Image 1: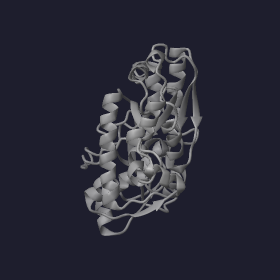
Image 2: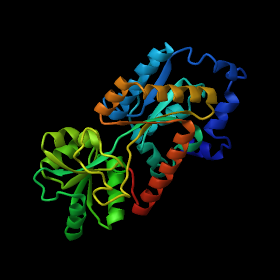
Image 3: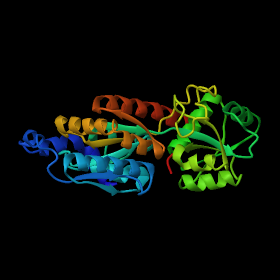
Image 4: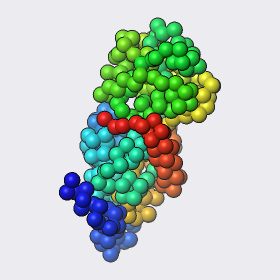
Length: 327
């Protein structure tokens, strides 16, 4: 309570404070960036998609720059704890934040955060994106996305997700809005438990993170109805896109990207974004990114900023309309 009161009374944002505290020689420090280790904060547990992609980036840039890029996992608080640490870090380019679609929903889901995503952090580069995949049990009578909507109009269906306000839940909510249906939402503590119950027939459908359901679709335990991107995924070439399935507005990209504290010198931001863009042109890197379920989709800071702000507006509108509450 006290910290929130102090924040309301304080006039400058974290970004403004960082700029005031920046040394006068900051511009000179950008020419030899990086000249020491970079801290790459991932606000999720180790082993997840964002963590794996960050380690790909860290490994490549460490070789490119001859300086360590140390990935540090800071899970918790719906991915806000790590984000706050980076927002409060010096704006010198040496502290990074791995971000996903969740961070475009969090400004609306958590309006009382002690920092502001759009004021205290700056988008540096988008790295890659991944579709959501709509999956049902292998023995389900539902074989298409249209049949799913028709079934939901006839009787209540249970839809699992990895938690309230997560990308699977948001995709479900978008589908409900587009089809004027209402599923019974069953939030789980993560994607794995929802997959287990879906396979077991305890729930009817999951609008899943692509990598979480991929192995079960390939193994014949689940049936994929569609992927939520404009193009089919190379790992699932026989699964139609949502546009092909009759729902062109159900485009959802579970992207991953990189942010730094606001006030970070532009030459550092541009150098980092350029290096990530170069990384995505390397065939072996692209193949590794695709193998884990992502599609390379690099954007520079200007383009990623526009994209991120549009995502905040898009999901904020849906969250308010559907009255979605965080866990």
